Length: 141
Figure 1 (cartoon, one colour):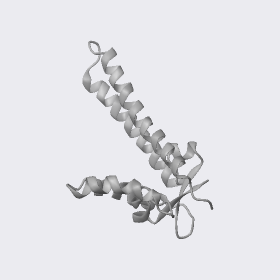
Figure 2 (figure 1 turned 90 degrees about the vertical axis):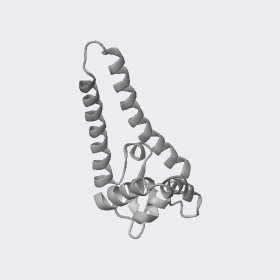
Figure 3 (figure 1 turned 30 degrees about the horizontal axis):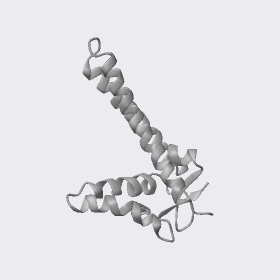
């Protein structure tokens, strides 16, 4: 198995973040267009539903395939570093994404972690801190 290129991982992350931004922009545009005719609650509810749907797709892909939409688009996959198998929900969602998010929310240490996490990709094993926490690596699918 060949490790994913650093630039491919960056593009995959950009795609994933762009999807979230697109949902937020669509909600803002819908609100601006319907300001007089629709309630803010309806528009925010629609935005929330779209965000939940996107989250559900990402969690499903991470659990079943070890991919996000961005990683799938670029032909990348998350695997356990120990045996190169899909880590499933606990490894890919809870440990890799959830733990990293939780750590980044800790006052003072969180922002340091958030900056240091992606910088670890420049090591020889190309594993960010969140990969090391979960025991994963990203490979070319």
